[in-house]
Length: 279
Ligand code: 13P
Image (cartoon, rainbow, N blue to C red; front, side):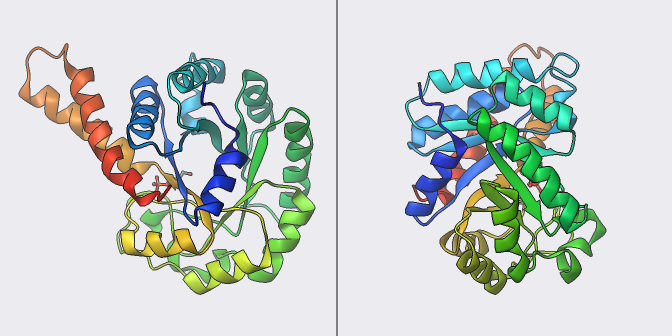
């Protein structure tokens, strides 16, 4: 049984001066593949449920996701865990906590500082009483499709506010905006590594980097030694999944072996991506 607390895995990553990689995973193929390759490479890893996909699980049933993740974690020895990503819906967060999620994200990054702190602290109070970790976001990681979010300094996390936010919100990890954005980039992101170092110096709270698809490896390797302990990837992983399905269906009339091919392709991608985690 290797289901671990996310905060424990982030602590391990911090000690090793690296980052665990967290993959948005919407179904069995994706969860199973992450934990299988984590075990093969002997590296911790995380899967994350996006609230948009929570609707798919038995029509709003995160309990099924939790059961699959717990069962898959039971099969491996390396520490793995799962997490509810980007959620603003208090009811869904509570439901995930009750279902056994070891970690949830309350995303108040679009709110005022005061509202973000207040709501995150409320979630943290309940979550901590249940032994569940809470990720928060300060500053705002926007969308790559806009082409402007990733460079908009107004959205970046302010160094002087980050430490105060962590203290007041009681979050266990903090997602920061330093030049990434969600989705496919139209132009290569350039991380503000000085800002990352300054935020890391100002707080002991583990830092999280969102919008991981398409960030060049050399920038990630630096960011991982400068305080990023959790790195989120979604778009690349889904793209691999759907492109493999599409190609397979175009090339084959008998599609009963599709799942095997899909899992093999996901696992090839993960084998390469997880090398970035130096644990
Ligand atoms: P990408 O989909 O851009 O990789 O971002 C994933 C993410 O940050 C999930 O929280």
